[in-house]
Image (cartoon, rainbow, N blue to C red; front, side):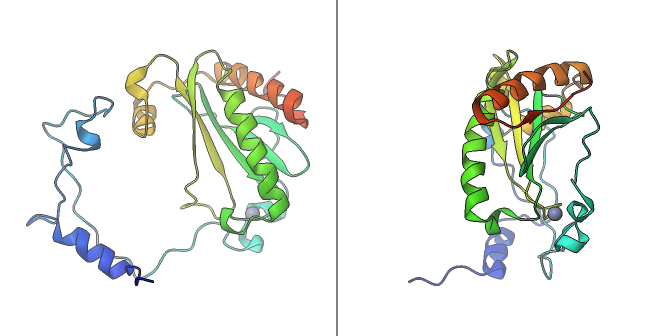
Amino acid sequence: MREPESPEQFYARVLAATDDEGRLPVAVDAMAGWDIYPYELDSLRMKTLQPLADEEPARRGETVADCGCSQGPPAPDDGVTRIWTNERWHLDLGADSGLPVTAMLMPFEHHDLGHLPADLAAEMGQLVVTIADAVEHVPSVGRAALAKYGDGGAHLHLFFFGRPARMLQLRGSPLLDWEENLPRVPLEVLQANAEVIAERLVVHFGGTAGRLGA
Ligand SMILES: [Zn+2]
């Protein structure tokens, strides 16, 4: 078996590609050259490369005692943002969004993705499929995208994004760059879209729809 690269070796390769100011060139042959890339290239430049951190920083809720979930459900069912729930999972609406759908799936129990018990993992797989299908039934959505980052909070949270239908410029991984710059979608519009998702989840998966301001 070959020796995998260390963090220092990875960083050294990246650093070697920077210029005198410590900047990488903008990769105009890659994403920045795609027609879906949201920015003009004339004045675009990369930020200078930061030094390698001594260690990965602790995130919010690394232990269950430090996580909001030990105080009950981490996102309150306030009748505004809860899309759907069952005994083990809740799906919540991102209320500040430029996309027709931004939603977050979380288990009630404290787990990160890499340590999810097998029964919850199996249920999550089926939920991901059902939620993705439900998001694509929202009339203004062309495609469901999903993501797991986990750099801020340790408690597992999967993101679902609805890419606006027929806005082909928003396809692919630059979707979130576009999202930041799109006008905010009114909350009542987001809630009406979320009701489509909740209804399909209840029919195809069970569980309970949130009230979503209704
Ligand atoms: Zn937690």
